[in-house]
Image (cartoon, rainbow, N blue to C red; front, side, top):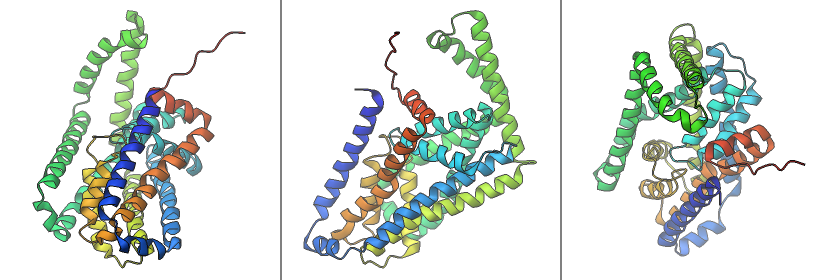
Length: 351
């Protein structure tokens, strides 16, 4: 079995077991009654809203591309982000999705370094938004921080984010240091990627150095002539997360509950931080159990399992479905998927 199939099956299995565990532990007679009275129009609205978030994400990516002087259609860039959602869903910390978007932007005539700057810029905007909301989330849900397991998960996620942020800032500040490290790594890895001669290795090193320069220049452009694009990127980031956080509100309304919008938003800020931990593909298990723990503060136990199931189905399983279909529709993206997640093409036999 190929690696990507193992990751997909593993992530789905962990997710299913986690949801089943939560549902079994909270299932009672009121759960059956809640299922009878479920209002499917709200669940459908949540699904449509999540699909609308793909467009918002695509518009953000397009705005950052334009800030660097690269014009790409809304349709194409939305296609790219949808395709990447499948790979993101079966790799730890969504790492595969980032690589796929970089590669796809590069295929659309954006230099690799600039494509990397765009994708990294998106992740930084997300991180800035989430961590800016943390004081608000702690104020609303202050009681949960006394939980030892939550403290440990939160500390690990925070540490990871700050380490990555430090590496990014240092890399932008000292590009020559980054070049030195990448040259060392390139020299060591070159024999394994088919670059065995000195000339081939030198050419590879020159390419890597050029892309690092592109990346560094792109960051400079974002904070100079590309500031307008960066501001639009911030606006789209805000809209994207508001739309995404609204799904839980609609789910609870579909279960005939009247949720506090502020509380549901605050809970998802904390959950977003926990899900950064690269424990499993697509954060399976971490997301479901984390959601059950945090949502239990304001969701009745009788509908907690249904709530987690619906939320995860819309924010994760729907990504796998639509992202997988888009990757199959766009043949080149399907080939990139196989490349990034370890599948190997079957050898062709000559006639």
